[in-house]
Amino acid sequence: MKFKLNKSLFDLLINIPEVNQYIIKRVKIDDYIEFSIDAKDFREVQLLINDEIVLHGMDNQDTVNDLGLRLYKLYDDILYQKNNQ
View 1 (spheres, rainbow, N blue to C red):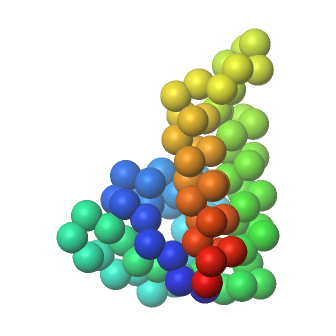
View 2: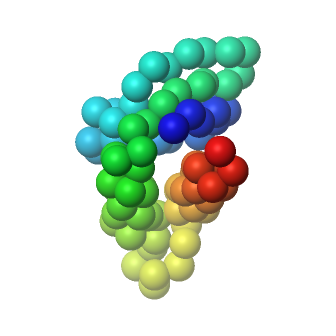
């Protein structure tokens, strides 16, 4: 499955522990990174992003912080791209 993210969202994605092992064929095009994830691994990547939201994307009151908002955008963006391939 092919994806395209702006550099800041891609950097956020690869800084999530264990996600980098699922990224294949990165290509930088202007301010975007195109990459692939095997279809069988997509659900695992989703779960890792979700774990990051729960662990670091919320403050003590379980309110979404700035990192959490960026992680939700990342999650939504890759899900949208997956569903529109």
